[in-house]
Amino acid sequence: MSLKDNLTLSILSKAEKEGYGILAQACYDAQSAIGLVRAAERAKSPAILQLFPISLEYGGLPYLRFCVELAHAASVPIAVHLDHATTAEALELAIGFAEKHGVKFDSIMVDASHADTEEENIAIAKPFIDRCKAQGISTEVELGRLEGGEAGVREITGEMLTDPSKAEVFMRETGADILAPCVGNRHGSYKNFGGPQWRFDLLETLGTQFKGRVPICAHGTDELPEEYWQRMIKLGVTKINVNSWCRDPYAAALSAGLASKPFPEAVEEATEVMASHCAKWFKIFGSEGKA
Image 1 (cartoon, rainbow, N blue to C red):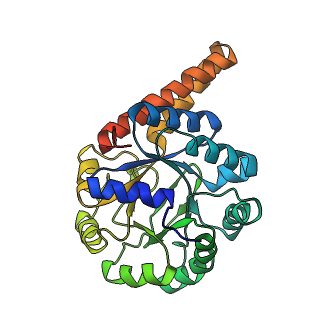
Image 2: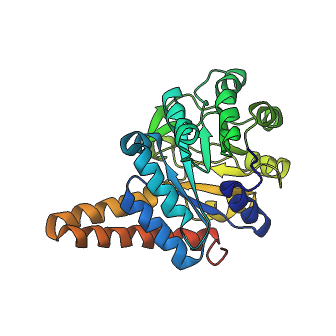
C-alpha cells in the first residue's frame, strides 16, 4: 500500500515547508485524547495523538478504534501514532490490528534502539517496518540511544549519540520514514544529568542532510528551557513529542475534581485543563492557524 497519502507524513511535510512544529501529545485515556482534539480544532492546528504501547495493551482494539475515529473525524488534520514500540509483542498487537481488523495507526515508532549495534537495530526493525508499509503505515526509528525513562516508556541506559555519517544508510536499510535522533536528549527528568545539554550541531547536520526527505522527531522534551523549542524547529525538527507538560496538569485536575465534584463535572473540567495546555504548545510551536 502506498504512503503517498499517509496522514502523519503529510502533516509533517507541510510543517517543514512552512517552518513550524507539530505537537505529538501522549494520551493515556479517552478524556486526554478528547482534550487534545478539542484544542486542535479550536486553534485550527494540525496535531498528532500519540499512544504508548502500555495504553494500547490496556485498551486494545476498542481504544485504538476510538482514538482513530476521534482523530480522523476532527475538523483539522490529526494523525494517530504509536510511540516507542520496543517489543515484538507490542508491534504484533499494533500491526495485527491493521492486518486483521483494518484499524490502523497512521504511524508507528519501531524502536529497536536497545540493540547493541546499528546492524542489529536494522535487523530487528526492518521486518516490522515492511509489514507497516504494506498497510500504509509510516514508521519512525531511533538511531543512537536515548537514556532515561518515563511513564509508559521503559528505562534505557547507555546513551549513544546519533552519528550523522551513518544516518543515510540507516534510514535506507530500515526503510523507515521518520528519524528520531539522540542529540543529548533524554527521557524523563534532566535533573540528574545537570540539565539539558543538547548537541544542536548534530541536529543542524541532520536537518540539513534530510531536508525535504526525512522528518526529524524530537524526543525527551520534559523540562526544556523555552529557547530550545524555536531553535529545534529552525533546525528542521517537525514532530515534537510531549508527555508530562500536558499530562501532569490534566491528571492533577482529574484527581482533585473526582475528590470533590460529581464525576461528569470532574471529567469535563480535567478535559478542559488538558485542552488548555495543548493550546499553549500550538502557539509555541507556531502551528496555530496552520490547518
